[in-house]
Amino acid sequence: MSGLYIHDLSVRYDKRQVLASLEAGPLPRGQITALLGPNGSGKSTLLRALAGLTRVHAGSLSLDGETLALSAASARSHSVVYLPQALPAGVRLQVLESVLVACRATRGYAGSLGRSPHGDDLAHAHTVLHRLGIEGLAARSLDELSGGQRQLVGIAQALVRDPQVLLLDEPLSALDLNHQFHVMQVLREVTRESRIVTVVVLHDINAAMRACECAMLLHEGRIMRFGPPSEVVTPATLSQVFGVAARIEPCSHGHHQVLIDGLAAQTGIASR
Amino acid sequence: MATLPHQAVPQDISVRHYRRLTHRRVMWLFAVTALIVCSLLFDLRTGPSGLPLMALLHTVFERASADPATSVIVWQIRLPYAVMALLVGASLGLSGAEMQTVLNNPLASPYTLGVSAAAAFGASLAIVLDIAIPGVSQTWIVSANAFIFALLCALMLDSVARWRGMNTAGVVLLGIALVFAFHALVSLMQFVASADALQGLVFWTLGSLARADWPKISVLAVALALALPLSMRNAWTLTALRLGEDRAASFGIDVRRLRLSTLLRVSVLSALAVSFVGTIGFVGLIAPHIARTLFGEDHRFYLPGSMLIGALTLSLASIASKLIIPGVLIPVGIVTALVGIPLFLGIVVRSQGQVG
Image (cartoon, rainbow over all chains, first blue to last red; front, side, top):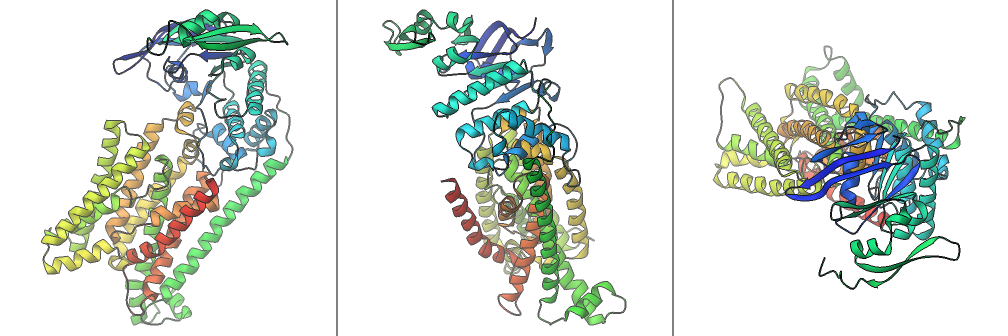
Protein backbone atom coordinates (compact mmCIF):
# COMPACT_ATOMS: atom_id res chain seq x y z
CA MET A 1 0.00 0.00 0.00
CA SER A 2 2.90 2.35 -0.56
CA GLY A 3 1.96 5.68 -2.12
CA LEU A 4 -0.63 8.39 -1.94
CA TYR A 5 -4.33 7.52 -2.22
CA ILE A 6 -7.15 9.92 -2.93
CA HIS A 7 -10.54 8.85 -1.60
CA ASP A 8 -13.80 10.41 -2.75
CA LEU A 9 -12.33 13.94 -2.83
CA SER A 10 -14.74 16.79 -3.59
CA VAL A 11 -14.06 20.52 -3.68
CA ARG A 12 -16.62 23.26 -4.22
CA TYR A 13 -16.11 26.97 -4.66
CA ASP A 14 -19.39 28.45 -3.47
CA LYS A 15 -21.93 26.41 -5.41
CA ARG A 16 -19.63 25.36 -8.22
CA GLN A 17 -18.34 21.80 -8.09
CA VAL A 18 -14.65 22.00 -9.00
CA LEU A 19 -13.65 18.46 -8.12
CA ALA A 20 -16.26 15.73 -7.99
CA SER A 21 -15.59 12.61 -5.92
CA LEU A 22 -12.09 11.91 -7.16
CA GLU A 23 -10.85 8.42 -6.47
CA ALA A 24 -7.30 7.51 -7.36
CA GLY A 25 -4.26 5.68 -6.19
CA PRO A 26 -1.67 4.79 -5.61
CA LEU A 27 0.31 7.81 -6.70
CA PRO A 28 3.50 5.80 -6.28
CA ARG A 29 6.55 6.61 -4.23
CA GLY A 30 9.75 7.26 -6.13
CA GLN A 31 7.84 8.28 -9.24
CA ILE A 32 6.58 11.53 -10.71
CA THR A 33 2.86 11.76 -11.37
CA ALA A 34 1.85 14.36 -13.95
CA LEU A 35 -1.45 16.16 -13.55
CA LEU A 36 -2.74 16.93 -17.04
CA GLY A 37 -5.83 18.65 -18.32
CA PRO A 38 -7.08 21.85 -19.93
CA ASN A 39 -7.48 25.14 -18.07
CA GLY A 40 -10.24 24.94 -15.53
CA SER A 41 -10.20 21.16 -15.35
CA GLY A 42 -9.27 21.29 -11.66
CA LYS A 43 -5.54 20.45 -11.81
CA SER A 44 -4.37 23.31 -9.64
CA THR A 45 -7.31 22.88 -7.29
CA LEU A 46 -6.47 19.22 -6.83
CA LEU A 47 -2.84 20.08 -6.13
CA ARG A 48 -3.86 22.73 -3.59
CA ALA A 49 -6.29 20.29 -2.01
CA LEU A 50 -3.50 17.73 -1.66
CA ALA A 51 -1.39 20.48 -0.06
CA GLY A 52 -4.15 21.33 2.39
CA LEU A 53 -4.45 24.87 1.03
CA THR A 54 -8.02 24.54 -0.22
CA ARG A 55 -11.02 23.68 1.88
CA VAL A 56 -12.10 20.21 0.92
CA HIS A 57 -15.82 19.53 0.91
CA ALA A 58 -15.58 15.79 1.32
CA GLY A 59 -13.11 12.97 1.03
CA SER A 60 -9.79 11.96 2.48
CA LEU A 61 -6.16 11.29 1.64
CA SER A 62 -3.91 8.54 2.83
CA LEU A 63 -0.20 7.99 2.53
CA ASP A 64 1.05 4.41 2.90
CA GLY A 65 -2.24 3.49 4.52
CA GLU A 66 -2.15 6.34 7.05
CA THR A 67 -4.73 9.08 6.80
CA LEU A 68 -3.41 12.57 6.07
CA ALA A 69 -5.15 15.52 7.67
CA LEU A 70 -6.82 17.75 5.10
CA SER A 71 -5.45 21.02 6.36
CA ALA A 72 -1.93 22.34 6.31
CA ALA A 73 -1.52 21.92 10.05
CA SER A 74 2.06 21.72 11.13
CA ALA A 75 1.71 18.03 11.90
CA ARG A 76 1.49 17.10 8.24
CA SER A 77 3.37 20.00 6.72
CA HIS A 78 6.54 18.11 7.47
CA SER A 79 5.52 15.41 5.05
CA VAL A 80 3.78 17.44 2.33
CA VAL A 81 5.38 20.43 0.64
CA TYR A 82 3.75 22.57 -2.02
CA LEU A 83 5.56 24.77 -4.50
CA PRO A 84 3.55 27.51 -6.18
CA GLN A 85 4.43 28.53 -9.73
CA ALA A 86 7.18 30.96 -8.80
CA LEU A 87 9.02 32.53 -5.92
CA PRO A 88 7.93 36.11 -5.35
CA ALA A 89 10.33 38.52 -7.02
CA GLY A 90 12.31 41.17 -5.22
CA VAL A 91 13.04 39.40 -1.97
CA ARG A 92 16.27 40.38 -0.30
CA LEU A 93 17.32 37.00 1.00
CA GLN A 94 20.34 35.03 0.01
CA VAL A 95 19.81 31.58 -1.44
CA LEU A 96 21.35 29.68 1.46
CA GLU A 97 19.46 31.91 3.86
CA SER A 98 16.15 31.21 2.14
CA VAL A 99 16.72 27.46 2.29
CA LEU A 100 17.59 27.80 5.96
CA VAL A 101 14.37 29.73 6.55
CA ALA A 102 12.35 27.00 4.87
CA CYS A 103 14.09 24.49 7.12
CA ARG A 104 13.41 26.39 10.33
CA ALA A 105 10.13 28.15 9.61
CA THR A 106 8.08 25.87 11.84
CA ARG A 107 10.69 24.76 14.32
CA GLY A 108 8.65 26.70 16.79
CA TYR A 109 11.02 28.68 18.85
CA ALA A 110 12.28 32.18 18.77
CA GLY A 111 14.67 33.78 16.39
CA SER A 112 16.45 35.84 18.93
CA LEU A 113 19.67 37.38 17.77
CA GLY A 114 21.90 35.40 20.03
CA ARG A 115 20.62 32.07 18.83
CA SER A 116 22.14 31.68 15.44
CA PRO A 117 21.15 28.62 13.46
CA HIS A 118 22.85 25.36 14.28
CA GLY A 119 25.71 24.34 12.11
CA ASP A 120 23.67 21.22 11.35
CA ASP A 121 20.89 23.16 9.70
CA LEU A 122 23.40 25.17 7.72
CA ALA A 123 25.21 22.05 6.61
CA HIS A 124 21.91 20.39 5.74
CA ALA A 125 20.83 23.41 3.69
CA HIS A 126 24.13 23.41 1.91
CA THR A 127 23.96 19.68 1.22
CA VAL A 128 20.59 20.15 -0.46
CA LEU A 129 21.99 22.94 -2.63
CA HIS A 130 24.93 20.74 -3.50
CA ARG A 131 22.65 17.89 -4.42
CA LEU A 132 20.75 20.10 -6.86
CA GLY A 133 24.04 21.36 -8.25
CA ILE A 134 23.38 24.96 -7.25
CA GLU A 135 25.70 25.41 -4.28
CA GLY A 136 27.44 28.05 -6.38
CA LEU A 137 24.36 30.23 -5.96
CA ALA A 138 24.43 30.02 -2.15
CA ALA A 139 25.58 33.59 -1.61
CA ARG A 140 23.46 35.15 -4.36
CA SER A 141 20.39 37.19 -3.55
CA LEU A 142 17.02 35.75 -4.59
CA ASP A 143 16.11 38.91 -6.47
CA GLU A 144 19.00 38.51 -8.89
CA LEU A 145 18.31 34.92 -9.94
CA SER A 146 16.93 33.85 -13.29
CA GLY A 147 13.60 32.04 -13.50
CA GLY A 148 15.21 28.62 -13.77
CA GLN A 149 17.60 29.23 -10.89
CA ARG A 150 14.70 30.48 -8.79
CA GLN A 151 12.74 27.31 -9.54
CA LEU A 152 15.69 25.15 -8.48
CA VAL A 153 16.06 27.17 -5.29
CA GLY A 154 12.33 26.64 -4.70
CA ILE A 155 12.87 22.89 -5.01
CA ALA A 156 15.78 23.17 -2.58
CA GLN A 157 13.51 24.98 -0.11
CA ALA A 158 11.08 22.08 -0.43
CA LEU A 159 13.66 19.29 -0.17
CA VAL A 160 15.27 20.75 2.93
CA ARG A 161 12.04 19.90 4.75
CA ASP A 162 12.44 16.18 3.94
CA PRO A 163 9.05 15.86 2.25
CA GLN A 164 7.22 12.59 1.71
CA VAL A 165 4.97 14.26 -0.83
CA LEU A 166 6.18 17.00 -3.15
CA LEU A 167 3.60 19.05 -5.05
CA LEU A 168 4.63 21.42 -7.85
CA ASP A 169 2.35 23.74 -9.78
CA GLU A 170 3.65 24.22 -13.34
CA PRO A 171 7.33 24.29 -12.44
CA LEU A 172 8.36 24.59 -16.09
CA SER A 173 6.09 27.40 -17.21
CA ALA A 174 8.64 30.23 -17.03
CA LEU A 175 11.75 28.29 -18.02
CA ASP A 176 13.82 28.03 -21.15
CA LEU A 177 14.45 24.61 -22.72
CA ASN A 178 17.71 23.95 -20.92
CA HIS A 179 16.23 24.70 -17.52
CA GLN A 180 13.08 22.73 -18.28
CA PHE A 181 15.18 19.63 -18.77
CA HIS A 182 17.43 20.42 -15.85
CA VAL A 183 14.52 20.89 -13.43
CA MET A 184 12.73 17.74 -14.56
CA GLN A 185 15.94 15.72 -14.34
CA VAL A 186 16.62 16.99 -10.83
CA LEU A 187 13.05 16.19 -9.85
CA ARG A 188 13.33 12.65 -11.19
CA GLU A 189 16.55 12.04 -9.32
CA VAL A 190 15.41 13.30 -5.94
CA THR A 191 12.05 11.61 -6.33
CA ARG A 192 13.67 8.27 -6.99
CA GLU A 193 16.48 8.54 -4.46
CA SER A 194 14.32 9.76 -1.59
CA ARG A 195 11.25 7.74 -2.61
CA ILE A 196 9.04 10.84 -2.64
CA VAL A 197 5.53 10.95 -4.05
CA THR A 198 5.97 13.80 -6.52
CA VAL A 199 2.94 15.34 -8.20
CA VAL A 200 3.47 17.94 -10.92
CA VAL A 201 0.95 20.03 -12.82
CA LEU A 202 2.21 20.19 -16.40
CA HIS A 203 0.98 21.91 -19.53
CA ASP A 204 3.57 20.34 -21.79
CA ILE A 205 2.25 16.87 -22.56
CA ASN A 206 5.46 15.77 -24.24
CA ALA A 207 7.42 16.72 -21.13
CA ALA A 208 5.00 14.62 -19.10
CA MET A 209 5.38 11.62 -21.41
CA ARG A 210 9.14 11.95 -21.26
CA ALA A 211 9.74 12.52 -17.56
CA CYS A 212 6.81 11.03 -15.67
CA GLU A 213 6.08 7.43 -14.85
CA CYS A 214 2.47 8.11 -14.03
CA ALA A 215 -0.16 10.52 -15.30
CA MET A 216 -3.62 11.68 -14.32
CA LEU A 217 -5.82 13.35 -16.89
CA LEU A 218 -8.51 15.61 -15.47
CA HIS A 219 -11.56 16.78 -17.32
CA GLU A 220 -14.24 19.02 -15.85
CA GLY A 221 -13.39 18.11 -12.29
CA ARG A 222 -13.27 14.37 -12.86
CA ILE A 223 -10.47 11.92 -13.48
CA MET A 224 -10.58 10.89 -17.09
CA ARG A 225 -7.68 8.46 -17.01
CA PHE A 226 -5.05 7.51 -14.47
CA GLY A 227 -2.06 5.28 -15.16
CA PRO A 228 1.11 5.13 -17.24
CA PRO A 229 1.39 8.16 -19.55
CA SER A 230 1.22 5.99 -22.66
CA GLU A 231 -2.21 4.74 -21.61
CA VAL A 232 -3.48 8.08 -20.37
CA VAL A 233 -2.39 10.18 -23.32
CA THR A 234 -4.03 8.77 -26.44
CA PRO A 235 -5.51 10.37 -29.55
CA ALA A 236 -8.95 9.58 -28.18
CA THR A 237 -8.46 11.22 -24.77
CA LEU A 238 -6.70 14.23 -26.28
CA SER A 239 -9.58 14.73 -28.66
CA GLN A 240 -12.17 14.40 -25.95
CA VAL A 241 -10.45 16.47 -23.26
CA PHE A 242 -8.50 19.09 -25.20
CA GLY A 243 -10.59 19.07 -28.36
CA VAL A 244 -7.58 18.54 -30.61
CA ALA A 245 -6.81 16.02 -33.30
CA ALA A 246 -3.53 14.39 -32.35
CA ARG A 247 -1.22 11.58 -33.30
CA ILE A 248 1.19 9.82 -31.00
CA GLU A 249 4.19 8.50 -32.86
CA PRO A 250 7.59 7.23 -31.89
CA CYS A 251 10.47 9.48 -32.81
CA SER A 252 13.73 8.19 -34.22
CA HIS A 253 14.92 7.46 -30.67
CA GLY A 254 11.84 5.46 -29.92
CA HIS A 255 10.23 7.97 -27.52
CA HIS A 256 6.55 8.63 -28.01
CA GLN A 257 5.77 12.14 -29.18
CA VAL A 258 2.43 13.89 -29.29
CA LEU A 259 1.84 15.67 -32.56
CA ILE A 260 -1.12 18.01 -32.81
CA ASP A 261 -2.72 18.24 -36.24
CA GLY A 262 -5.45 20.73 -35.42
CA LEU A 263 -8.75 21.08 -33.68
CA ALA A 264 -10.84 17.99 -33.40
CA ALA A 265 -13.75 18.07 -35.81
CA GLN A 266 -16.68 17.69 -33.46
CA THR A 267 -15.36 19.40 -30.34
CA GLY A 268 -14.47 22.98 -31.13
CA ILE A 269 -14.21 25.62 -28.38
CA ALA A 270 -17.80 26.61 -29.02
CA SER A 271 -19.30 23.24 -28.25
CA ARG A 272 -17.27 22.69 -25.08
CA MET B 1 16.03 13.84 4.13
CA ALA B 2 16.27 10.27 5.16
CA THR B 3 18.22 9.06 2.19
CA LEU B 4 20.14 12.24 1.65
CA PRO B 5 23.80 11.55 2.19
CA HIS B 6 24.78 13.69 5.16
CA GLN B 7 28.28 14.28 4.07
CA ALA B 8 30.10 16.56 6.41
CA VAL B 9 30.54 20.03 5.02
CA PRO B 10 33.53 21.16 7.04
CA GLN B 11 33.70 24.91 7.21
CA ASP B 12 32.43 25.05 3.71
CA ILE B 13 32.88 28.28 1.84
CA SER B 14 29.22 29.14 1.64
CA VAL B 15 28.61 28.35 5.29
CA ARG B 16 31.55 30.53 6.20
CA HIS B 17 30.19 33.21 3.95
CA TYR B 18 26.83 33.01 5.71
CA ARG B 19 28.44 33.31 9.11
CA ARG B 20 30.38 36.33 7.96
CA LEU B 21 27.16 37.86 6.67
CA THR B 22 25.46 37.28 10.00
CA HIS B 23 28.43 38.78 11.77
CA ARG B 24 28.34 41.83 9.50
CA ARG B 25 24.67 42.37 10.23
CA VAL B 26 25.26 42.27 13.97
CA MET B 27 28.02 44.83 13.44
CA TRP B 28 25.60 47.02 11.52
CA LEU B 29 23.14 46.81 14.41
CA PHE B 30 25.86 48.00 16.76
CA ALA B 31 26.90 50.73 14.33
CA VAL B 32 23.36 52.08 14.06
CA THR B 33 23.03 51.94 17.85
CA ALA B 34 26.24 53.95 18.16
CA LEU B 35 24.89 56.49 15.70
CA ILE B 36 21.72 56.74 17.78
CA VAL B 37 23.76 57.54 20.88
CA CYS B 38 25.63 60.27 19.00
CA SER B 39 22.42 61.64 17.59
CA LEU B 40 20.81 61.60 21.04
CA LEU B 41 23.71 63.58 22.53
CA PHE B 42 23.63 66.06 19.68
CA ASP B 43 19.85 66.37 20.04
CA LEU B 44 20.26 67.12 23.76
CA ARG B 45 22.88 69.77 23.08
CA THR B 46 20.85 71.50 20.42
CA GLY B 47 18.51 74.21 21.61
CA PRO B 48 18.02 77.92 22.20
CA SER B 49 20.35 77.96 25.20
CA GLY B 50 23.75 76.53 24.40
CA LEU B 51 24.85 73.68 26.62
CA PRO B 52 28.40 72.36 26.77
CA LEU B 53 28.66 68.61 26.48
CA MET B 54 30.29 68.21 29.89
CA ALA B 55 27.59 70.22 31.65
CA LEU B 56 25.00 68.18 29.83
CA LEU B 57 26.50 64.84 30.83
CA HIS B 58 26.96 66.09 34.37
CA THR B 59 23.29 67.05 34.58
CA VAL B 60 22.13 63.75 33.14
CA PHE B 61 24.27 61.48 35.28
CA GLU B 62 24.56 63.50 38.50
CA ARG B 63 21.29 65.25 38.69
CA ALA B 64 21.50 66.03 42.41
CA SER B 65 24.60 68.17 42.19
CA ALA B 66 23.68 69.86 38.91
CA ASP B 67 22.82 73.49 38.34
CA PRO B 68 19.02 73.76 38.95
CA ALA B 69 18.32 75.87 35.86
CA THR B 70 20.24 73.51 33.60
CA SER B 71 18.61 70.58 35.31
CA VAL B 72 15.15 71.89 34.44
CA ILE B 73 16.10 72.45 30.81
CA VAL B 74 17.62 69.02 30.47
CA TRP B 75 15.18 66.95 32.49
CA GLN B 76 11.93 68.73 31.69
CA ILE B 77 12.47 69.64 28.06
CA ARG B 78 15.43 68.28 26.17
CA LEU B 79 15.59 64.76 27.53
CA PRO B 80 11.86 64.02 27.23
CA TYR B 81 11.79 65.36 23.65
CA ALA B 82 14.88 63.46 22.62
CA VAL B 83 13.84 60.18 24.25
CA MET B 84 10.33 60.49 22.89
CA ALA B 85 11.79 60.94 19.41
CA LEU B 86 13.72 57.69 19.82
CA LEU B 87 10.76 55.73 21.15
CA VAL B 88 8.28 57.00 18.58
CA GLY B 89 10.77 56.43 15.77
CA ALA B 90 11.48 52.92 17.04
CA SER B 91 7.77 52.09 17.33
CA LEU B 92 7.00 53.39 13.86
CA GLY B 93 10.03 51.64 12.36
CA LEU B 94 9.11 48.29 13.88
CA SER B 95 5.42 48.65 13.00
CA GLY B 96 6.20 49.64 9.42
CA ALA B 97 8.57 46.71 8.94
CA GLU B 98 6.05 44.14 10.12
CA MET B 99 3.19 45.73 8.20
CA GLN B 100 5.20 45.61 4.99
CA THR B 101 5.97 41.95 5.52
CA VAL B 102 2.52 40.68 6.47
CA LEU B 103 0.82 42.73 3.76
CA ASN B 104 3.60 41.96 1.27
CA ASN B 105 3.47 45.58 0.19
CA PRO B 106 6.32 48.09 0.30
CA LEU B 107 3.82 50.93 0.73
CA ALA B 108 2.33 49.67 3.97
CA SER B 109 3.03 51.76 7.07
CA PRO B 110 1.10 53.15 10.03
CA TYR B 111 0.60 56.31 8.00
CA THR B 112 -0.63 54.76 4.76
CA LEU B 113 -2.97 52.35 6.52
CA GLY B 114 -4.84 55.22 8.14
CA VAL B 115 -3.73 54.63 11.73
CA SER B 116 -2.09 58.08 11.95
CA ALA B 117 -5.01 59.86 10.29
CA ALA B 118 -7.46 58.14 12.60
CA ALA B 119 -5.41 59.23 15.60
CA ALA B 120 -5.47 62.80 14.29
CA PHE B 121 -9.23 62.64 14.01
CA GLY B 122 -9.58 61.25 17.51
CA ALA B 123 -7.38 64.01 18.86
CA SER B 124 -9.21 66.73 16.97
CA LEU B 125 -12.53 65.43 18.23
CA ALA B 126 -11.28 65.65 21.80
CA ILE B 127 -9.88 69.15 21.26
CA VAL B 128 -12.87 70.60 19.45
CA LEU B 129 -15.53 69.07 21.65
CA ASP B 130 -13.36 69.95 24.62
CA ILE B 131 -13.98 66.59 26.25
CA ALA B 132 -13.16 66.83 29.93
CA ILE B 133 -12.94 64.26 32.67
CA PRO B 134 -12.42 65.73 36.13
CA GLY B 135 -8.97 64.97 37.47
CA VAL B 136 -7.49 64.00 34.11
CA SER B 137 -5.34 66.49 32.25
CA GLN B 138 -6.41 67.64 28.81
CA THR B 139 -3.34 66.29 27.02
CA TRP B 140 -4.00 62.78 28.30
CA ILE B 141 -7.61 62.92 27.19
CA VAL B 142 -6.52 64.02 23.71
CA SER B 143 -3.95 61.24 23.54
CA ALA B 144 -6.40 58.66 24.85
CA ASN B 145 -9.01 59.64 22.30
CA ALA B 146 -6.41 59.59 19.55
CA PHE B 147 -5.40 56.11 20.62
CA ILE B 148 -9.00 54.89 20.70
CA PHE B 149 -9.64 56.08 17.17
CA ALA B 150 -6.35 54.73 15.84
CA LEU B 151 -7.17 51.38 17.37
CA LEU B 152 -10.72 51.48 15.98
CA CYS B 153 -9.24 52.18 12.55
CA ALA B 154 -6.90 49.20 12.85
CA LEU B 155 -9.73 46.98 14.05
CA MET B 156 -11.95 48.16 11.22
CA LEU B 157 -9.22 47.45 8.69
CA ASP B 158 -8.74 44.07 10.27
CA SER B 159 -12.41 43.08 10.44
CA VAL B 160 -13.25 44.24 6.92
CA ALA B 161 -10.26 42.31 5.64
CA ARG B 162 -11.41 39.26 7.58
CA TRP B 163 -15.03 39.59 6.57
CA ARG B 164 -14.35 39.99 2.87
CA GLY B 165 -11.37 37.64 2.89
CA MET B 166 -9.42 40.48 1.33
CA ASN B 167 -6.03 40.00 -0.24
CA THR B 168 -3.08 42.14 0.79
CA ALA B 169 -3.43 44.69 -2.01
CA GLY B 170 -7.06 45.19 -1.02
CA VAL B 171 -6.07 45.88 2.57
CA VAL B 172 -3.63 48.58 1.47
CA LEU B 173 -6.25 50.21 -0.79
CA LEU B 174 -8.72 50.13 2.08
CA GLY B 175 -6.11 51.78 4.29
CA ILE B 176 -5.60 54.57 1.77
CA ALA B 177 -9.36 55.09 1.61
CA LEU B 178 -9.36 55.39 5.40
CA VAL B 179 -6.56 57.98 5.23
CA PHE B 180 -8.65 60.17 2.95
CA ALA B 181 -11.79 59.67 5.00
CA PHE B 182 -10.13 60.64 8.27
CA HIS B 183 -8.36 63.60 6.67
CA ALA B 184 -11.74 64.86 5.49
CA LEU B 185 -13.14 64.42 8.98
CA VAL B 186 -10.19 66.31 10.47
CA SER B 187 -10.81 69.13 7.99
CA LEU B 188 -14.44 69.16 9.06
CA MET B 189 -13.34 69.48 12.66
CA GLN B 190 -11.04 72.34 11.73
CA PHE B 191 -13.91 74.06 9.94
CA VAL B 192 -16.20 73.99 12.97
CA ALA B 193 -13.46 74.59 15.56
CA SER B 194 -13.14 77.77 17.58
CA ALA B 195 -10.00 79.83 16.98
CA ASP B 196 -8.52 78.57 20.21
CA ALA B 197 -9.19 74.93 19.51
CA LEU B 198 -8.00 75.36 15.95
CA GLN B 199 -4.55 76.34 17.13
CA GLY B 200 -4.20 73.27 19.30
CA LEU B 201 -5.62 71.12 16.56
CA VAL B 202 -3.27 72.31 13.84
CA PHE B 203 -0.36 71.84 16.19
CA TRP B 204 -1.50 68.27 16.83
CA THR B 205 -1.98 67.29 13.23
CA LEU B 206 1.48 68.57 12.33
CA GLY B 207 3.13 66.10 14.65
CA SER B 208 5.32 67.48 17.40
CA LEU B 209 7.48 66.18 20.19
CA ALA B 210 6.65 69.21 22.32
CA ARG B 211 4.01 67.37 24.32
CA ALA B 212 6.41 64.72 25.51
CA ASP B 213 6.68 64.10 29.24
CA TRP B 214 7.97 61.26 31.38
CA PRO B 215 4.66 59.48 32.06
CA LYS B 216 3.93 59.26 28.33
CA ILE B 217 7.46 58.09 27.68
CA SER B 218 7.05 55.30 30.23
CA VAL B 219 3.79 54.15 28.66
CA LEU B 220 5.33 53.99 25.18
CA ALA B 221 8.52 52.39 26.48
CA VAL B 222 6.54 49.64 28.18
CA ALA B 223 4.47 49.05 25.05
CA LEU B 224 7.58 48.80 22.90
CA ALA B 225 9.26 46.51 25.42
CA LEU B 226 6.22 44.21 25.27
CA ALA B 227 5.89 44.29 21.48
CA LEU B 228 9.50 43.67 20.52
CA PRO B 229 9.88 40.18 22.04
CA LEU B 230 6.59 39.12 20.43
CA SER B 231 7.85 40.38 17.08
CA MET B 232 11.17 38.63 17.46
CA ARG B 233 9.44 35.40 18.39
CA ASN B 234 7.88 35.45 14.93
CA ALA B 235 11.11 36.32 13.15
CA TRP B 236 11.50 32.98 11.34
CA THR B 237 7.86 32.64 10.38
CA LEU B 238 7.75 36.21 9.10
CA THR B 239 10.86 35.56 7.02
CA ALA B 240 9.24 32.39 5.66
CA LEU B 241 6.23 34.48 4.68
CA ARG B 242 8.55 36.38 2.34
CA LEU B 243 9.02 33.15 0.36
CA GLY B 244 5.38 33.43 -0.67
CA GLU B 245 2.11 33.07 1.15
CA ASP B 246 1.20 29.65 -0.27
CA ARG B 247 4.63 28.28 0.32
CA ALA B 248 4.60 29.51 3.89
CA ALA B 249 1.16 28.00 4.37
CA SER B 250 2.37 24.66 3.02
CA PHE B 251 5.19 24.82 5.58
CA GLY B 252 2.43 24.64 8.16
CA ILE B 253 2.37 28.34 9.06
CA ASP B 254 -1.10 29.65 9.83
CA VAL B 255 -0.71 32.64 7.52
CA ARG B 256 -4.07 34.26 8.31
CA ARG B 257 -3.50 34.14 12.02
CA LEU B 258 0.07 35.34 11.71
CA ARG B 259 -1.00 38.25 9.52
CA LEU B 260 -3.93 39.35 11.67
CA SER B 261 -2.20 39.02 15.01
CA THR B 262 0.85 40.88 13.72
CA LEU B 263 -1.29 43.61 12.20
CA LEU B 264 -3.21 44.06 15.43
CA ARG B 265 -0.08 44.15 17.58
CA VAL B 266 1.78 46.69 15.49
CA SER B 267 -1.36 48.77 15.06
CA VAL B 268 -1.67 49.10 18.82
CA LEU B 269 2.00 50.06 19.06
CA SER B 270 1.91 52.64 16.28
CA ALA B 271 -1.46 53.99 17.48
CA LEU B 272 0.07 54.58 20.87
CA ALA B 273 3.10 56.29 19.33
CA VAL B 274 1.13 58.70 17.18
CA SER B 275 -1.40 59.39 19.94
CA PHE B 276 1.37 61.03 21.96
CA VAL B 277 3.07 63.06 19.26
CA GLY B 278 0.56 63.54 16.47
CA THR B 279 0.86 62.64 12.84
CA ILE B 280 4.43 61.76 11.93
CA GLY B 281 4.54 60.24 8.52
CA PHE B 282 7.20 58.53 6.48
CA VAL B 283 9.34 57.17 9.30
CA GLY B 284 7.31 53.97 9.33
CA LEU B 285 7.54 53.84 5.57
CA ILE B 286 11.22 54.62 5.02
CA ALA B 287 12.85 52.85 7.94
CA PRO B 288 11.94 49.36 6.63
CA HIS B 289 13.32 50.20 3.19
CA ILE B 290 16.64 51.36 4.61
CA ALA B 291 16.74 48.36 6.94
CA ARG B 292 16.15 46.02 4.02
CA THR B 293 19.17 47.33 2.14
CA LEU B 294 21.38 47.20 5.24
CA PHE B 295 20.20 43.99 6.89
CA GLY B 296 18.45 41.97 4.18
CA GLU B 297 15.16 40.33 5.02
CA ASP B 298 16.16 37.81 7.63
CA HIS B 299 13.71 39.20 10.16
CA ARG B 300 16.01 38.46 13.09
CA PHE B 301 17.99 41.44 11.82
CA TYR B 302 15.45 43.24 9.69
CA LEU B 303 12.99 43.89 12.54
CA PRO B 304 15.43 45.30 15.11
CA GLY B 305 17.25 47.01 12.24
CA SER B 306 14.13 48.81 11.08
CA MET B 307 13.35 49.73 14.66
CA LEU B 308 16.79 51.27 15.19
CA ILE B 309 16.73 53.04 11.83
CA GLY B 310 13.34 54.48 12.75
CA ALA B 311 14.69 55.75 16.05
CA LEU B 312 17.75 57.26 14.36
CA THR B 313 15.64 58.90 11.65
CA LEU B 314 13.30 60.62 14.06
CA SER B 315 16.17 61.64 16.32
CA LEU B 316 17.93 63.29 13.36
CA ALA B 317 14.64 64.89 12.34
CA SER B 318 14.31 66.25 15.86
CA ILE B 319 17.74 67.86 15.57
CA ALA B 320 16.85 69.30 12.18
CA SER B 321 13.57 70.68 13.52
CA LYS B 322 15.56 72.81 15.94
CA LEU B 323 18.28 73.87 13.50
CA ILE B 324 16.34 74.83 10.36
CA ILE B 325 15.12 78.08 11.86
CA PRO B 326 17.33 78.84 14.88
CA GLY B 327 15.30 79.52 17.97
CA VAL B 328 12.11 78.05 16.48
CA LEU B 329 11.01 74.50 17.10
CA ILE B 330 9.40 73.36 13.85
CA PRO B 331 6.93 70.49 14.31
CA VAL B 332 8.93 67.37 13.61
CA GLY B 333 6.20 65.94 11.37
CA ILE B 334 6.95 68.66 8.84
CA VAL B 335 10.64 67.75 8.85
CA THR B 336 10.07 64.02 8.39
CA ALA B 337 7.77 64.71 5.47
CA LEU B 338 10.19 67.19 3.85
CA VAL B 339 13.22 64.96 4.27
CA GLY B 340 11.32 61.73 3.90
CA ILE B 341 9.70 62.31 0.53
CA PRO B 342 12.92 62.85 -1.47
CA LEU B 343 14.56 59.98 0.39
CA PHE B 344 11.61 57.76 -0.36
CA LEU B 345 11.59 58.74 -4.02
CA GLY B 346 15.29 57.98 -4.16
CA ILE B 347 14.70 54.50 -2.80
CA VAL B 348 11.81 53.84 -5.16
CA VAL B 349 13.73 54.99 -8.22
CA ARG B 350 16.79 53.00 -7.22
CA SER B 351 14.90 49.78 -6.52
CA GLN B 352 12.94 50.15 -9.78
CA GLY B 353 16.22 50.53 -11.60
CA GLN B 354 17.52 47.33 -10.05
CA VAL B 355 14.48 45.31 -10.99
CA GLY B 356 14.19 46.63 -14.55
